Image (cartoon, rainbow, N blue to C red; front, side):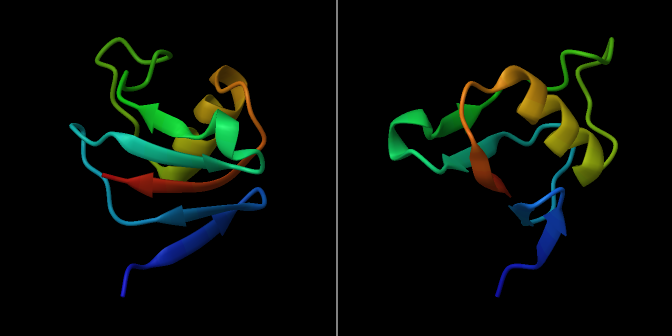
Length: 71
């Protein structure tokens, strides 16, 4: 069973590393997708924490995110 964290109302699943991509599930399934750009706010494109992942994806994703999974 995958470990779940709830951060800012968003369910976050899995463990990530500096090469992880993220599967994003939104309230409207038309907005679902995959984020594979790394962290645009870091010169090395690396996320340091799930909190940073959530904060960044909420700022850049055009949908109401309800779930993020590291893939």
